[in-house]
Length: 64
Image (cartoon, rainbow, N blue to C red; front, side, top):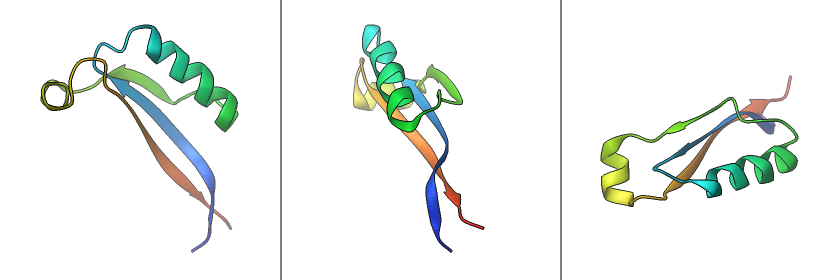
């Protein structure tokens, strides 16, 4: 199966503040579409990774 770039992506964060807006702007330009959603990350991840953590998840598209 051959991949064809990013089909969907999301940004999650632990009180990322202004940095979240910067990530949204940067990745919207890079991927040429806005994230499917932006939300607070789970408490467990925030406790281990720390406040200010920002993560991006994505699903690759498939070529027909």
